[in-house]
Length: 154
Image 1 (cartoon, rainbow, N blue to C red):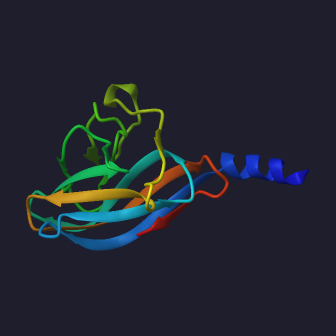
Image 2 (image 1 turned 180 degrees about the vertical axis):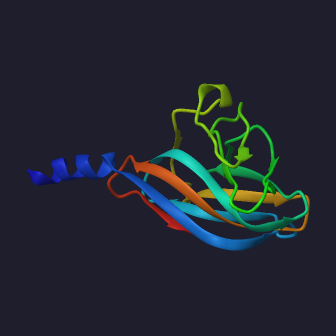
């Protein structure tokens, strides 16, 4: 009888997936940042931080399982140490700044529910354009909606 209680506890925990800093080339374009395996999750936050000056006005477009989570690609070359945050809402805009309030005015959603693909994992993809390259890290705050759900760094 302890299994259902354990499943409920595990499914309610908020977790963070972290992708360490690396160089992303505009020539490559799309990079799979995280994979979602074994069941659905609720994405609460998706963002990152610039760790080295970008070469050019590099832009980023994020998708979760093929769905755009911002209205358009936005430049993320604000400077080393600046953060960016997806609004997880195709009506809103990814924000890049020294600090970002999560407010209704920025059209932040209450979360984004993602499943998996029929033939594989769900994918969180970042597509880089303009400029030459960008160096930084990514994070995703999420909640499991199935005790078997797993998020991995791609």
